[in-house]
Length: 67
Image (cartoon, rainbow, N blue to C red; front, side):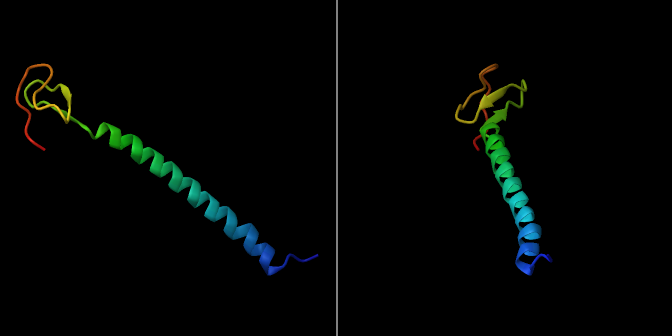
């Protein structure tokens, strides 16, 4: 029996759309993890990583530029 047009569309379009949705979900998950690290900054004097909310470097006490 010959597959109908509906079956051909179902078997070709659905898997591609599903792959796109899965890819998008993984992309969103990755970007949310990167955003967590974006809340840090580096001291220009000693190179230490300090939270963006702190006005001074935790290692050397240097004033960090306002962001």
